[in-house]
Amino acid sequence: MIDLYTAPTPNGWKASITLEELELPYEVHVINLMAGDQKQPEYLKLNPNGRIPTIVDRDADNFAVFESGAILIYLAEKTGRLMPSDPKGRSLVIQWLMFQMGGIGPMMGQANVFFRYFPEKIQSAIDRYQNESRRLFEVLNTRLADHQWLAGGYSIADIANWSWVRTYKWSGVNIDGLDHLRRWMDAMSARPACQKGVAVPFKIPNLTDQTEGDAAKEFAKNAQTILQK
Image 1 (cartoon, one colour):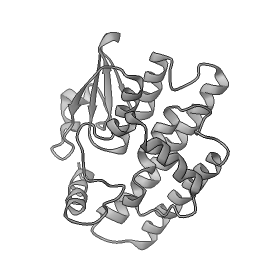
Image 2: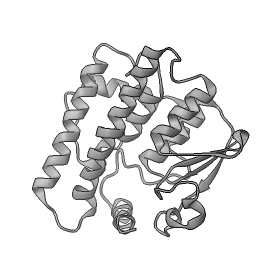
Image 3: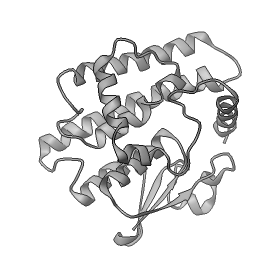
Image 4: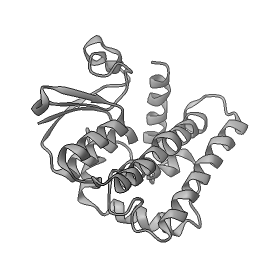
């Protein structure tokens, strides 16, 4: 049994989708980011960085894993699925996983901050992070032009990147003309595990379609509060 400590964010979805794909039994523990649960001493013992997600593997002497990319690698290696065991295949998956960890996630995250959450609109910062996110999307699109999935077979690399890319509208990133990326996104969206995983720990306003209105404004307001914690 896996204990999953999480909140409804792209990084949290990476873990829950992977658990769903692997059909591993897991128990969800909701981390209320607005209430500061992630900074409580008992949680910091599991995740010294005070972020989500974190897993605890009860079947491995309550071994705790933090950092979403590390969680995905751990689960893939634990089960022998979603990542090849041969050095080249494993490396290819990790390369595209790190592409998300070092590029897609940070750039879209900063686009969210400046485009959605900061009360002051600094256009040069908005342009910087939206343009860089678009450039990274173009890298994915080029890769997917002649590959069904990012790293050979379906893998944790696809899960990690899709969990962020699916929220492109919330970040204000344009994907016009990226037909291969759209094809891949549709294929990911059709997977039952992806559908279940993004509803963990609970459903939030659909940030893939609904970027205005009361629900979106409330979500952005809450995110402003989290930024200060």
